[in-house]
Image (cartoon, rainbow, N blue to C red; front, side, top):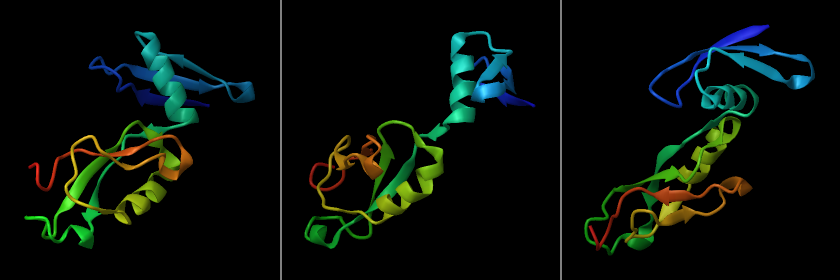
Length: 128
């Protein structure tokens, strides 16, 4: 059984052909560099995604000027296992962030116990 993927690790966009071998191994062809083979292996065996979302500003921040109905944009510090992205988004949407918050501040450490932090991508509150 073979599958085709387009590598996204660089602008070359190599068309990869992937064949599944016995024992769970895969053979990759069509890649012009080793990154294409690594991309295909990860995408088929353990896919991950970078996650961006917004977290709610908590009621404890109501005294901070401009807090209103704002949300704090955030992202994962590293790619997250694709099959658990929905679970991660639920956890992020359940957060209540206190302002002020600075860009790069960790909002959720070791999300779902997988070693990936959720960090703010914008400064909001007093230091805007």
